[in-house]
Image (cartoon, rainbow, N blue to C red; front, top):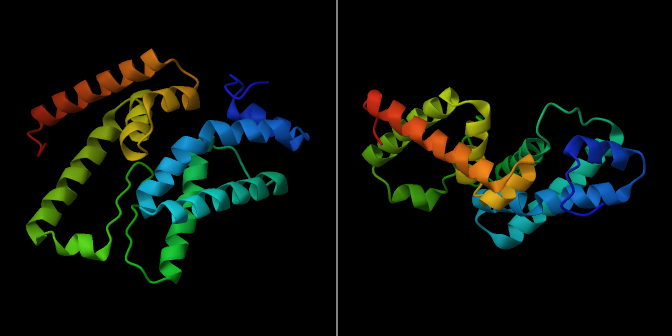
Length: 194
């Protein structure tokens, strides 16, 4: 089995639970780049991101081996939730200012000094735009929404998105194109801010 295997994440997890450690290596390789990018986008510190990345996979292994991992869809989303929760806990313990939305599709982190540079009006307009975009994303078909979330919120390349979802790059690009066309059309119809 090679690292670019077409085997699903679910199958790899089952194989790993059956004693095939190579299957977990494939999972790690498959999700390494997008997960690290997601974590880094939250903490903005390479060393800290590496620590959270390692801790996330340690926690994932622990959950999987203990039988507490219950598949509810997308393995990568679950990894992101694990990482996000650890990051929130870390910043709470260290009393740093951090705000991460409860919505899985929205990544919104602001640190104290960055916020000082913004006026109240800027903050309110930015919040309105994010809310409108969140609404428009919710209107998209799941396949299109998934591509945009991975691309723009998790900063994944189209190649990584295609590998993660098990689709071709052309399919990923096509879905992104249609999603953006739909968002533009709906935003224009509703006279939204962007």
